[in-house]
Length: 292
Length: 273
Image (cartoon, rainbow over all chains, first blue to last red; front, side, top):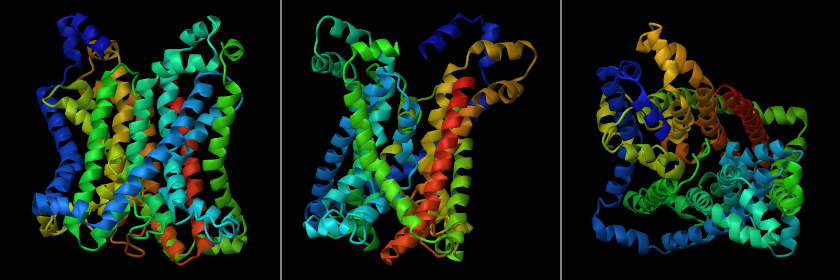
C-alpha cells in the first residue's frame, strides 16, 4: 500500500490522471459498494439486535438467563469450542513448522489435504462420524460394549467441531513462519539452545500474533458451527444442544425474541472477532492468506 | 536450504509425524469410512440411492443456486474490491472489515435473520413482497444466503491483485491512447482473471456444501427448494444410512474435483499474478 502511494506521488500530474476515474464512475461505484455491504451485511446485523431487544432489555436478559436449556447450550458451547480450538492449535503449530521449515516428499500433498475440510459440506462432516461411532457404525458396537457414548454426546461435538475448523490455525501460521524465515532459529541452535528452548524463546514469540489470529478465527467458527453438530448431536434439548442449535430450535418454536437474543450473542462474537482481527492486522503481520 | 535446515533445526520428524497422525485420525480415516460404507452397496443400489427424482431435483437446486450465487459474487465482489482499493470514502476501514463478517457470523444466524428480513412483514419483505418478489421460501432466498456466505471470497482474492497492479501499465495504456474503459477491459481485467476465477471457485465450493443458512430460508419444499445436504439429513433421520452415505459420496466427489481445480487455479494465478 505504502509503496503504491509513494509511487503515485512521484508520478508527474498528467500521468497520474491516467489512473483516476471520472467522478461519476467513482461516485457510482462507491455508492454501489456502500449499498452492497449495507444490504448484505449491515442491515442483517442491525436487524439481529433490533429483534433481540424488541421486547425490552428485561425480556432480553430473561431469555438469556431464565431458561435452563439455553443456559446449558451456552455452557456446552463454551466447553466444546475451546477443546476443538486447542486440538487444532497444537496441530496447526506442528504442521506449520514442518511445512514452512523443511522440504520433504509429499509436502504439497499435505498442504492440499489440510484444506480438505473447507471443501467438505458440514453435513457430510457430521455424517462421517455417525458412520464411525454411531450405533450402526464401524466402532459403534465396541463402544457400546465398553460403555462409551460418542455420538449424541459431547465427544462427537468436539470431533465434528475440530473437523470443520481443522485448517484455520495451520493456514494462518504457514505463511507467517515462511515470511519470518529460519535465521533466528538457526542462530539460536548454533549458540547451543535446545530444540524446545528455541521453540519457546524464538519461534513462539515470533509467531504469537499469527497464533492469536488463527485461534480467534477458529474459535468464531467453532462456536458457530451448525451443520456438522446438527447431524452428530441428535439435538437433545438440554443435553447436546449448542448455542446455534438452540437458536434454531427457539426459532422453529416461534419464540423469535428468545432466538434472536441468543443469536445476538453469536453476532457480538462475530463482531468482536472482526475487531480483534483488524487490531492484529495492524500489529505487523503479512497480508492474510487468500482463503479464510 | 532444505538439507541444512533438517540437520540444524529440530523437530522435523516429531512435527511431521504428529501432523500426519492427527490429519489421518480426524479427517482421512473418517472420510475413508464414508467411501468404505458406500462401497458396501452394489452399483445398482448406489445408483438407485443417488439418482432418484428427488435427488436429481436436489442436485439441480444445490449446484444451480451455488452457480448463480458465485456468479453474483464475482460481479459485486469486483465492484467492492475495486472501490476499497482505489477510492477513499468515510468509514472505509470499517466497511473493509465488515466484508469478512460472513466468515465470522454463524451460518444459522445468517439464515435466520435473512428469513426474518424477507418475509411479508420483515424490514425488506414489506417492500418486496407486494412487488411480487418472494425471497423467503424460494430459490431466490437460497441464492441470497449463498451470496452472503460466499461474499468475502471474491473480494479478498481480488484485492491483493489490484493492490499489486503497478501504475506504469495503466499509464502506458493511457499514453498509447486507450480510454479508461479500454484500459480496464484490456489491461486490468485480464490481469485479475486468475484471481476472479479462484474467488468464483471458492465461493461456489462453499455454497455447494452450505446447510445452516439455507434451511431457515428455503422452507424445505421437496423438488423445489430442497438441497442435497438436506436430503442427507432427512435420509439420516429415517435411519437410511446407506442412502445418506451414497449421496454424501456424490457431494464429496464434487468437492474433491473442486478442490483440485482450485489448487490448479491458484498455481496459475501465482504464475500470472
